[in-house]
Amino acid sequence: MVHYSPDRKGGLSDTIAAIATPPGRGGIGVVRVSGPLCRQVAKHITGRLPPPRYAAFSRFRDGEGETIDRGLALYFPSPHSFTGEDVLELQGHGGPVVMDWLLSCVLQLGVRLARPGEFSERAFLNNKIDLAQAEAIADLIESASEQAARSALRSLHGEFSAQIQDLRDQLIELRCLVEADIDFSDEDIDFIEQGAVAERLQELQSILRRIHRSARQGALLREGIRVVLVGRPNVGKSSLHNRLAGFEAAIVTDVPGTTRDLLREHITIDGLPIRLSDTAGLHDSMDIIEQEGMRRTREEFTNADHVLLIADDQVGLTELEQSILGELPDNVSHTLILNKIDLSGASAERREDSQRVVLRLSVLTGAGMDLLLQRLKECAGFDGEGEGYFLARRRHLEALQRAGAAVAAAGEILKEEGPEEMLAEELRQAQNALAEITGEYRSDDLLGEIFSTFCIGK
Ligand SMILES: Nc1nc2c(c(=O)[nH]1)N(C=O)[C@@H](CNc1ccc(C(=O)N[C@@H](CCC(=O)O)C(=O)O)cc1)CN2
Ligand SMILES: Nc1nc2c(ncn2[C@@H]2O[C@H](COP(=O)(O)OP(=O)(O)OP(=O)(O)O)[C@@H](O)[C@H]2O)c(=O)[nH]1
Image (cartoon, rainbow, N blue to C red; front, side, top):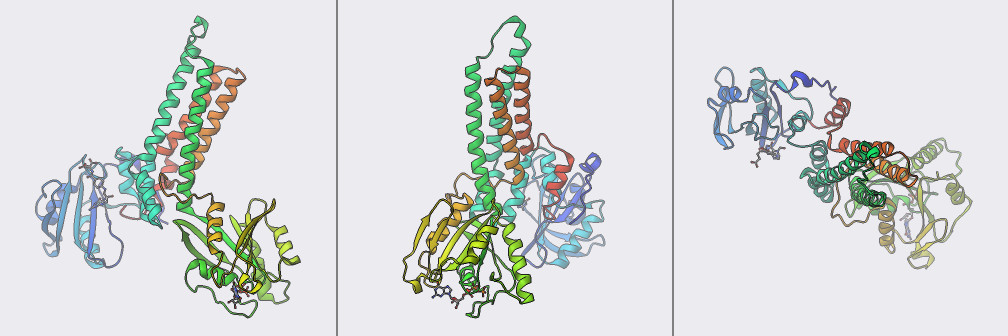
């Protein structure tokens, strides 16, 4: 991790450059430059200033006049560029040597190397994009599925920000009304009727809930859920893992205790990422390696979102499964899977009692696997529709929750006919929480935290 030391005072007046394309060999590679020195850099390297926003085929030369490469130069004069500053792109042949040479020539002209995320940070500081949009750029680059990418793109286009902004405007309007009422209270002018305020608070609450829901779905697309497979040896954990993962990742044998260590895999079900871990079979064993494996298994399921406890349908639940069920933490949901129905003769089914969901299936034949996929999506709270999501981050969910809590508190104050000043204060809190999402209300620490996780050149 590159240490992030924001120097925002003079930070925006210097010129930065980085290789914008991924490291290694590629068909094309791009060196991107942003800041006031772009014009000079263009003249030095290409011999002229390319016409604004037109790709100009040029010869790139180093300080000695030697040709580095021939490529396209693109010049975007401020403010009509990605960063809002003058931007120059030198698009050459992708290859580490050519790119490094080109970059080092640019850096000799008084330009400094950009920090990770610094181009996006400048776009943010120059009001080209807001914070949620900047985050969406990173999320788009890192998205693991098409659905995740689509959701990130919606945020990048400003749909998420627009909804947040709209909500904020409504909060501000309501707060102004309440504050006007405070200012004129001794003159006995009733600007607002209590019933009307209550109604508007409720409306705001329901919009907040709707946004939170789309954002939570989006966060699931981004982060997924952690699922752990547990069960006694030979019940079919590794087979299930492989079936879910779609390829032979774990070693499957009929010797009990084959899986001695943890196996982790990232899979997606209809776009929902699942971090799956297969664990050592749980049993009372004297083998020191197996005991260590079992200790890790227990550790793994205490950190899980969901546990799939697998048993053999022919055997059913024994004391061991009962004791595992007893060990599961309250906040970890679980499903009991009775496997190998092809041997027991039962048919695939889902049963539910007050304590748990039980699935009967066969990993070998695939019967009942659809029930399991459905169950996993249900546990994640994922509806799989894929439309209308925002690829939100925890930070956004948390801010939405705080805004919701403040609106709820405002409603309480109103109901109990508490002081209007307190009501206005809660509305202000809600408004600030929302402003954190788009970055209008922020700390430098937060910016550092966000942009330092970006890749170089972004
Ligand atoms: N070659 C190249 N491709 C790229 C980028 C880039 O920087 N360079 N991008 C980098 O992420 C993305 C595109 N993002 C961009 C965003 C804004 C502007 C821009 O010039 N905006 C001006 C003009 C807008 C207009 O003409 O409508 C502006 O906002 O004023 C350019 C690229 C993806 N592809
Ligand atoms: N008939 C039948 N056999 C199955 C089924 N699922 C798994 N098996 C078989 O059961 C045996 C054990 O499967 P594994 O997946 O290795 O079991 P495990 O629970 O991971 O075992 P350990 O690694 O020892 O903990 C293998 O021979 C599998 O082919 C099933 O649904 N039906």
